[in-house]
Every structure is written in C-alpha cells, then in structure tokens.
Amino acid sequence: MKGLVAGFSIGILVIVCIVTAAQYTTSLKYPSVTVDIQGQGSVLGDFDTTLWTNQKYMQFRGIPYAESPRGKLRFKAPVARLPWRQIFDATRYGRRCPVITTVSNLTAQELKADLEDCLNLSVFTKDLITKRPVMFYIYGGGFYNGSASDHPPKHLLEKDIVLVVSQYRVGALGWLTTFTHDMPGNAPFMDILLALKWVQDHISDFGGDPDNVTVFGQSAGAAMTSALLLSPKSTGLFKRVIVQSGSILGHWAINSDPRKQTERICEALNCGVCKRNDELYDCLSKATVLDILEVTQAEDFALVINDVYGNLPEHPIELMKSYNRSIPVMTGFTKDDGSFVLATYYDGMKAAIGNMSLVKVRQFADGIMNLVNDRTRLSNNLLTRLLFTPQILNGTAHKEALPAYFDLCTTIYIKSPVIALTTQLKEKNLADIYLYSFDYEGQNTRFGYELGNEHYPFNGGVHHSNDNIYLFSTHSLNDNDTRMAQKMVELWTSFAIDGIPSSSEGPPILPMNSPSGPYFHINNEITISNDVLDELTSTLDDPDNKKIDRENIEF
Image (cartoon, rainbow, N blue to C red; front, side, top):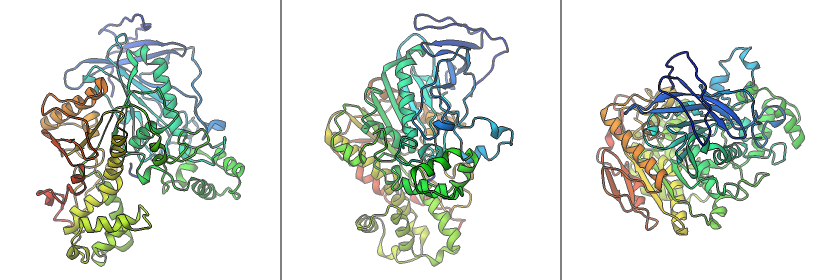
C-alpha cells in the first residue's frame, strides 16, 4: 500500500581532532571533529545547534555500515563495510536509496554512479565520552521511499540522547525475493539488523550506551520496528521500542504473494523467460536501477514470511504466540491516521468514474473495506453497522458520510493493527505497554505529501505522520506548535531514557493494565482515557467533525 508513504558551516578551516573512547578534544572555534571508530576507521563530522536552546551537537552523516548492494550483492543480505584507511568525510548526508522521484531526474552521467551504495547511517551526539541513551530511528515511506536526510535532529537533540538514523533498501531493489540464497527476502530488514549490530559495536565511540537502545519507527518503519520485536534475529540489539502509526499485524505490512510479484516485474522488464529462480535472478540482477524503478511504480512492497535466513520464519500472528521478551513498548496513532487512504481511494474513484453522485455511500465504503480482502465479510458488516446509518449508507451524500469514511480508513489501516499489537502484548504481561492517541492539529500537515491537497473535498485532519512534524525539525513552527514539539520530545526521550513516558505538564502516564487501557491523549493538554475502542469512532464522536469538510469543493 503506497503512501505508507541541516547542517551549517562556520568556516573553511578544518582541524582534525582524533577522538577515542578515552578522550576527545575540540573547540567551539573549529568547525569539525574526527572520531576514530574502533576497528572501522576515522570519520570527520561537523557541528550544528539545537533549535530552541542553541545547544551545540556533533553530526556524523552518511557513515557506511555495509558494502554497496550492487552487482552480485543486489537483493542479498547486507555485507558489513570493510574498514577504511583514509578519514571518511561524514559532513554530508550519504546517498539515499534509489527511488523513481530522484533517479528519474539524474543526468546520463549521474546514472553511471553507484546508485545502490546507500547503506549508511547518521549519528547525532552532544558528548563523545558520556554513555547516553541511544534512539535508533527507522523511517517510513510505504517500504518504497525514505531517507535519513528527511529527519533532521534539531528537536530531539535538545535532550541528552544520541540519535541514529539508518538508511535501508526500499522498493524492488530491497524487497523482491525468490526465497533462494540469490534473492533471500527481507533484505531491508537485514539492513536494519546490521545497522543495529553496528550500533552495538561502535556507538560507544560517539558517547552512546549500547545497553540502552530504543528503536522507534513510523508507518512502514513501525511495521519494521514491531517485526524486530518478534524476530528471532534481533535478540540483544535493543532495550525498548516506540511503534508509531502501524504494526506488523497490519494487512499491508506483509506481502501476500511475493513470488508472483517478482515474476510480474521480470516480465515487465521484457526478459522473456521469468519462471525459474535462476531466470528471475538473471533478469533482475542485470537490469538497470532506472529500469527497475520505472516498471515498479504501481507496485506495493512489504515484508515477507519465511525468508531464507529466518528473519520472519512464521506469520507474525504465529510468532506472537511464542513471544517471551521483556521489552517495554510505547505505541499509538494519530487521530485521523487513515485519511491518506481515503485520499488515495478518492483519487482512484474520481479518475475512474468522474461523477461521484453516481456512486452510493455503500459502494464507496465497500470498496475501501474490500482492500483488506476479508472473504467472510464479517469485518465489513460490523464496520458498516458501527459507522453508517441506513439513510446515509443507501444514499449519495458523501459529505455527510465523511466522518464515517475517516473512521473506516483509520480503523482498518492503522488503529486496528496498533490495538491488536498492544492487546496481544498486554496478554503476555511481560513488560509495560504504553498506548497513545496523537490528537493535536497544528498549522502544518503532511496531507497530500509533496503532491498537494487542494483538490480534495475534505481536510486531512490529524494526518498520518503529522506527529513527526514535532519530533523532527522539518517545518517552521508557531509558538503553539513549538510547545507541542517540546512536549513530544519530552515524551519520546523520557521513554528512551528510563522506559516511562513523562511530561512536565499533565497527569502521570500509566502503562496499560488491561487490553482496554489506560491510554493517553497528546494534545494541548495530556489527558487519560480508559477504553481504547472509543478511538474507532473518534471522528464520528467529535462534535467539531464538520471541520474536515471543505464546503467549497464537491465530493
């Protein structure tokens, strides 16, 4: 399902300061710092300052943790980067993993570069000696997009943590598989595992504590983060997790037929024979990056079950049955997390039919629910009964149905998978589970992403990934938005520091004591509720839900 989708220079003088775990020297006078990564090589970083209090921090961007997955390494498990002899320049972000929106704009000369050499990570730290909690971020992007440079650290570095943002392969160049050693499956997941192993081995050289690592991820990154909880390959790599707006239990998080997808892409590349494993690998390993990206623009990607290396040896539901790890979890969603699904579905229907007055509300809602492919239609029937009145259901008043559409999309795609994860973890009763709903609607939104949202007959509400606007310094914030960002940073970093989310404003936040709650709302004020199932109708129950309607645009 697609859609599940910074630095500064203070001079030209460069002073190289060799830093070890035992000591380091630098000066506000100089614009650079060098760290010796034990057993790997030296990296040159530079400095920047936090947004609110101008605290100085060091940034080492684009550090390679794996060899380029090109040629014979394409689709395979990542190979740890060999040590380097020269000082590695980490003052700029590394190459992002190939996506069509960036690669299609390259010149013929630029296309000759190694576009697949993108397995790098960025480290942001204020102190190279003190062992500080580590926050390891996994970005979203629908499994086909995303990069470290999209997540600047000027908010989170206000607190005394070390931030690591790792890149991993996306799209067809990462997720395609034949379930053989040539194309084993879940290569991007193995990228993340290798990056986490790098953190265990080397983060102490940057002032981080390898015994206090919190993995956090959003959307597709949330699926990856929750998959790490269940994977037998991730033991000992982290202490806590934060799962934002998604989980591995979502239908969109697992590829239902990866073999057929690989064959389909091989055929789209006009390779001729696309049935045997060796034929598929021969075609796809020799195709250019641009050709692969061009023929996969309509494809969806996700994790696969029973990959060769056993990263997900069974379906997550089965893995949950034997789950026995004591790892604290904080997870949640935005109030209107699924409005991006409604937007995508609306675009498709509008293009296919044009006049939406020809489509009844029941037809429109059924189309959304059928995307999940519940063949019993039990969930369809229950959601229909829960969200729609018969009068609205059998008419064409789509504007009146907007609150129900919002709750329908959000429940199916995000809230239900998150609630399922928390419920099953709570039943295990192995560690504290904290659940939140992010309800704040500020001046900025990611509704429409880079494509704009002006043509939609509805607003995006508290849209998917709007919470990240306050964690990462991507937008200009007004005073109220800044207060929200400070609150979010406090909540996220306090959980990373000691496993308990806390805020200087509001009541104490308690872990769930039942599958229903308690859970907390993040808004101008933090409040506590006790039945998370109330969130399934949060838009319908909102007395101010008319604000999602753009009255001047017809549905």
